[in-house]
Each structure stands twice: as structure tokens, then as C-alpha cells.
Length: 203
Image (cartoon, rainbow, N blue to C red):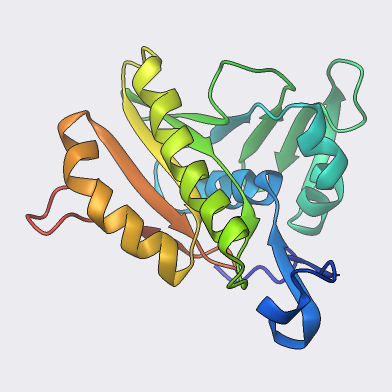
């Protein structure tokens, strides 16, 4: 995949400016991670319909409607009170439903006879600031915890932005996550998805 609009570049606060190149932070919001993983499922599996369940904050920070329009999706119906909730259709038959809700999994799709449920998190992907790096770590741990607490009948995937640090942590966590039936996937800045595999080959 080659998406050039998943990352927002913003001037870093003064206390963090020295931890990023040229004082500019690259933010991959949770909504961006959601749509990137949804597109990954549509492009690489049998899925034709993916459901995304953002909360209100996700919609404030990421333009779901505009992003999907640039990918060739037309909004066919509206759902709820937000401007972005509804059904989006692509001419090749893909369908994305955005239904602002909590507790249903951030991204959900039927792939063959199985259901894939993903919990996603975002963060700053180019910083050396200890606090922001820690937030990415905590985000991965939180997504894994949410999946462990849910009762999903199919695949469960924790999805987080790709950085060298998150790759190292995900690789360490992968064996134990695999024992619980949880996979880890990392989303790169242009939408590429890396499935993290444990040393013994388990995801």
C-alpha cells in the first residue's frame, strides 16, 4: 500500500521539539490506523465488507469521510449524529461501514467463515521523547488487554503504528500473545502492514 495521507505533521511542543527532526512530530492518529487496517483486510483477504467503530475523539482528529473519498469510496447512507457515520461503497464492491460505538472492536470483518476483530491505537511515530514512546508501548499493551477481555469467536489482532521501538516490543510480546490467540500487526506510515511473528513462527 502507498497512502501518503495517514500521518499528520505538526510542530512539536517546546519541551518535545528537540526529540524530533526539525521540531516536527509525525502523528498517526488512531483513526488513521483503523482505516489503514481496514484497507489491508479488503486488499489482502476475502473480505468485502469491513466495519469501523470509532469514538467521538477519533472523528475529531481524523477525517474519515475525506480519506475514504480519496480512495474512491462514495458515502451512500448516513448513520447516527456524526458527519462521518454511515455506509461507504467502492465501485469494485468493497463496503466500509463506520458506526461510532465502543466495545465492538475498532475494526471488524468477516473473512470466509471467520470474524477478524482488531483493536487499534495511534501515536507519534518519529519521536525519541520518552513519554511519547512510552505511550505507544502502553497503547499496545492496552489493545492486547482489550482483546483478552472480549469474547471474540474468530481472529483477534492488536494493531499499532510501526516504529523500531514498537517492533521490538511486539516481537517480545508475540509468543505470549499467541498463546492467548492474539496476533499483533504494525501499520507503517504509508499503510503497509507487518504481521509480527514470534521466534518459533507463531503470530
